[in-house]
Image (tube, rainbow, N blue to C red):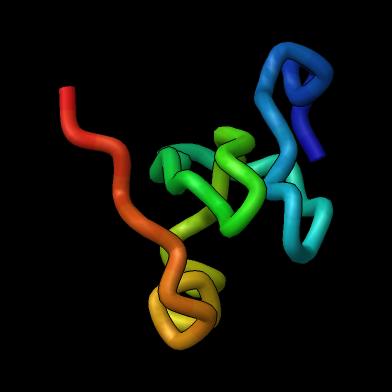
Amino acid sequence: MGIFDFFLSKCEICNRKVKPLRTYINDHGKEIKVCIPCSEYAERRAYKIKRK
């Protein structure tokens, strides 16, 4: 755990502070940020990846 970890965003599935995060849109239309390991779970839940 580094000194500047409080600047990182948290994954909304596992609550770890990691980087990079992918942005998905859930069933309710809310944007959620998900880490790479949890992105497999998000894709199984049929969340749509937000394109830039």
